Image (cartoon, rainbow, N blue to C red; front, side, top):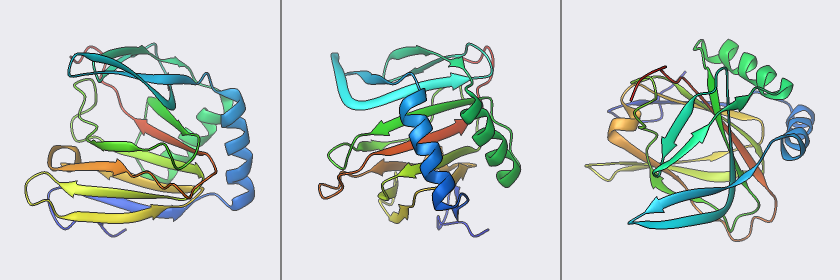
Length: 195
């Protein structure tokens, strides 16, 4: 598997690991069977609620803090467990939690950020499964500002690991012409008691 980053981290794109029928099946189940909530963040002292929705599931009632908001993990659903097992078989890594994002259409995206919360296993793999609309996904090096771009197809798998979160930011730009929803699952490993 080739590393998409030129230096300072490792990103592997496996392409479509689910066929279109399976990907559509899971998209429908995820849209209807997940406890979606509008995402919240505290940015520069202001409490913001986004159109984008999120959900947090795990093997334990982990708490997870990002953007100064504390979240509590819900127990796995059957679909999430099946997708976790598939992702573990492909990547060879183990995951104990999953952060889900629902983008209703291309008017919703995600600004530059890194997944470097204190509770995460340092350097651990973060596996991203995509369902629904194909979207652009970008990486930008913190120092050199070099960028890497790819398109995440429905049913595709992307893995970020090693020093990626230390040296690179990533984003999901808005795409105004996209009218279909996208659901993204990011499987990750939380370390109990790590703060």
